[in-house]
Length: 164
Image (cartoon, rainbow, N blue to C red):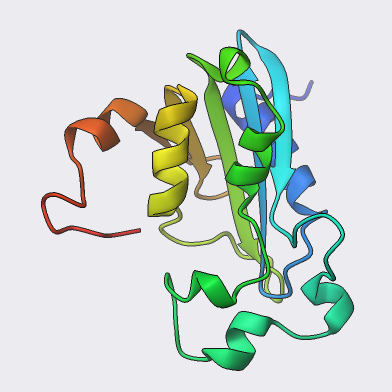
């Protein structure tokens, strides 16, 4: 008899499935917002509605104009982060006290994004949305659990640590 999947990995599996819809050529990200054991919204990374996706262009605009950047140059990226797409699809009332499940992997190797965590802008949005926990997949069975209060108490913009 197959062992039943734990609840956190169940939602992370759904986030990983959502990531399959991402339109980025380099990385696929998927997010699921859950509250009281109910899925509130999902999101994946990609261009704004109505704009051409990088997968349709056949190239990454960020990589074309800023080939050697990581964790910067977001103005050159066509995509909206999966967390952002999930949050704009839900009301704040639905997200208050909820959890966000996040999975990211590289398109070429399908390896999970090492050291993944929401970017600074997404962190600020998650705080304002009232989400209490973020779970980030490390590998198929393991994850990082983040208490959003830690981002409030340890403000990286005030202590000079702008790590991702």
